[in-house]
Amino acid sequence: MHKFSLVENALDSLEHAIEHINAMSTASSVGAYKRVILDLSHVAELLFKERLRRIHPAFVLADVDKYPSTTAYTVTAADALKRLQKIGEIEFTETDQSALKTIREKRNEIEHYEFSINEAEAKLIIGNVLSFLFRFSNDELDLDWAYRRLNDPEWTRLNQYAEFYEAQRAYVLETIEGAIPTMECPVCRNDTFDIEGEMCLLCGHSEPVSSCKSCQADYLDSQVEVEEAGLCPKCEWEDSYAASHFEKY
Image (tube, rainbow, N blue to C red; front, side, top):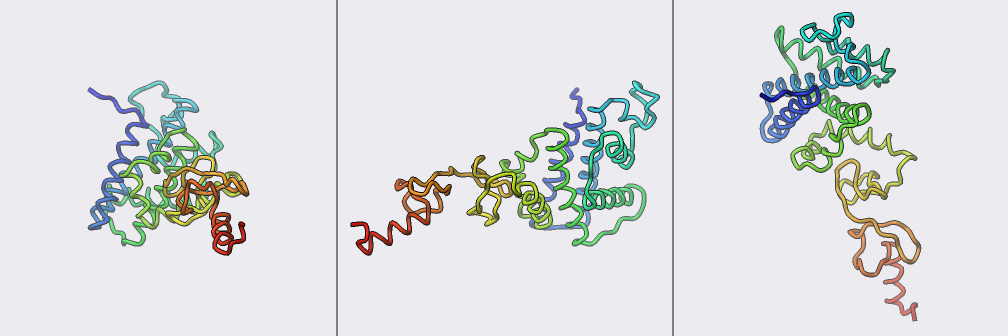
């Protein structure tokens, strides 16, 4: 018998959601959105409980006085969010809270009543919640999900999900502003290529970063025509221009 931890349980639901999202690239349906919303809502609830557990296991229970009972009811997602704000002093943006509230309400509709949602609304909710989950798992739980998003082929396909991509792009640009030296990524054309890490923090593209032997500027090998020359695009062009006009001699 295999026992899932809170994190393992959350990861299983996230992988299930990603499978459905990837499948929707060919055919979307209300049923598919329903399953993704249920899965992502479950992921958020479990991650909140794991964060509370790391503060103290009693906070996972609805009635903390019943700790260490293994049969007592656990805290709801809404109450877990409140406890994280008050006890854990964790800040959630208005966008995060709005997306979490909406997906929680939609989950309740699915489980207890009639369910209706249009495609635009579903994509926006799913995109914002996904972006939040990657941030929260990294910042609050030190999980490697954000790294896997950049390297796992199944997970990188999330970048094709426009609403998620835009939410993630806004977050990455805000995070790296003034804190991480970057350059334009040759693949996604955003100023999100981490020069020191040699990887785009948005689309996951990676390649070596070189230093120009002439002006010492950083550049990517894919940006130049002759890698062996050791020159950045600007110096390479100037060198080529000088050679063609005999100015080097």
